[in-house]
Image 1 (cartoon, one colour):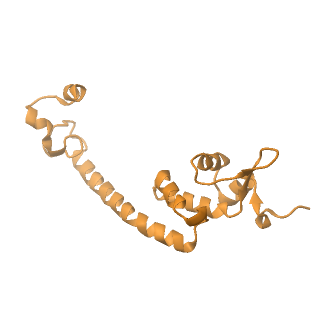
Image 2 (spheres, rainbow, N blue to C red; image 1 turned 120 degrees about the horizontal axis):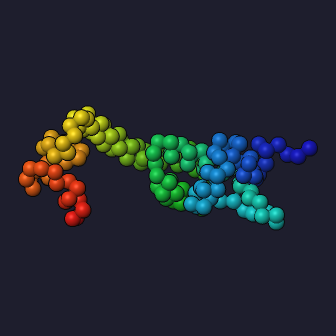
Image 3 (cartoon, rainbow, N blue to C red; image 1 turned 180 degrees about the vertical axis):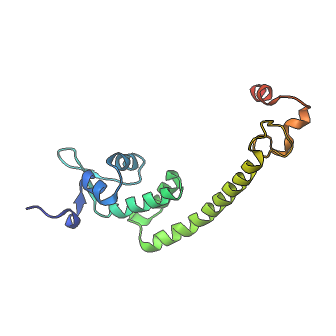
Length: 154
């Protein structure tokens, strides 16, 4: 009987998928984007270091809260010697990303509030429509439907 997968130094893509909860296609995508890496066996099969589980966990959590993959990759690339993130690394990253998340939350709340005022108006040129016509920029061109004509001219 072979070594149990939890005790192996390397994992197949299927084992990594089963252990991490990430689809095989997602793991291949992460690898193409440089977020994780594998070595190839003589039979051209991928083998991932066991520590890749922690990297995948960090990637998935960060994605779940809306951190773009480019930022996740940048953060992982800044770890010394490409090491697996530690708890201290995660704390540092999450503090940095928290401000960005707070800003996004604020922007979404503002969008929600503006959207509530806009529902049903249908006009798209009211001076109070901050979604379709911020600061009534179209109103300065006179009355009437100008949105499509001016958008094409731009």
